[in-house]
Structures are given as C-alpha cells and as structure tokens.
Length: 120
Image (cartoon, rainbow, N blue to C red):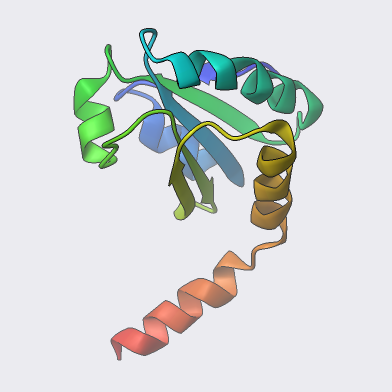
C-alpha cells in the first residue's frame, strides 16, 4: 500500500480507525526528508497490512504544531490510537525495519494498564 497524505481533516480518524499507523512529518525543502522518503515508501509497500501516512509540514503547520513536531523528518507510530514511538531524524532502512518490528511486538494494552495504575 502506498503512503497516504494526512491532514488536519483525516489525521485523528486515521490513527483511531487503524491498528498501527506510521506518520512521517516532512517538508519539500528538507534534504534528510527527501532521502528518507524512498525508504519510507518502500516500507509502506512491503508492510501492506500497516498504514503509512505522510504530513507535509508546510501545508499542515497547525497539525505539525499540535503533534509537537520541532524537527523534520519526524517519524511517529501509533498503535490502537496511542502514540508509541516518536523520533526526529531520517532512519536507514534497517533501523526503520527495527522500529516496525518493535511497534508490531509492543503490548500497548499492558502499557496503557500500567499508565492507568500509575494514575491511581
């Protein structure tokens, strides 16, 4: 599956409606963003059971600000609607594959239960 363009209008629904969503925050003038783009696109094609979205930070400045993106590229991963990974910087293919595997394996339900228990 190819990456999808995420905007303020579809970001939240995309994150909530899908089990795992990766989001690449980028800009056209950003060299590291341009070098990461083909790696990200290839991962999207390889892992067609996951959702890979892209946010153009020039066009979606409010969304990038709401996500607290301060450096690009920034990669975020959501699982069951919860943010489980966020890191600035372009990743090489092996590192991106490690992140994908870690997000797949991450037990978000247990983590959320631990957080709920800490709040009590």
